Image 1 (cartoon, rainbow, N blue to C red):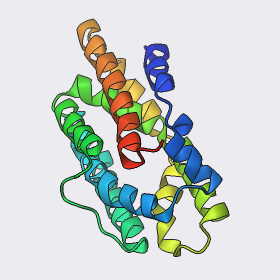
Image 2: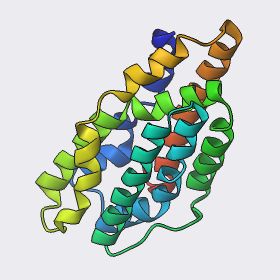
Image 3: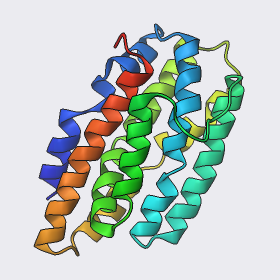
Image 4: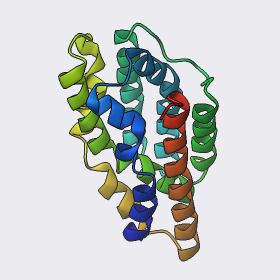
Length: 194
């Protein structure tokens, strides 16, 4: 099952997206970082729902704290998270997340798509901030520091996936693919020239 999920994620590997590549190279304008902080926070706020759907209240609480760190990221960029995303693709990501976070099987697939990429994307973004965006306040860093070091979610999710029925594993796989593409599309919407 893990191979199938990883194939979905690999197809839409966020580190390969031009948005994150521009961030890593320091060519992403600060205005794009601000839009990302402002808009993508609406998605970050949905993550506790996913963990609640899979029956993990402790991880849901951690995600609530991470949403606060995201708010700090936005504030450090002199913006704030919008309650509802206005970028079409980010709004679609939020809607997709809410739909997939409605059942355990689909929530596991959707969470896998996001969480399995988090350590690498957070480390890449942190390196980009430290290398190319040194003039930004230190408040831009804590969200990414927390996620660059957090690697246990993949195993937690895989342990739960192993208990699913064959039918629910298909639901989980489809959700992983759907979420992987929605995450990719959201970045495209935030920086159309990518």
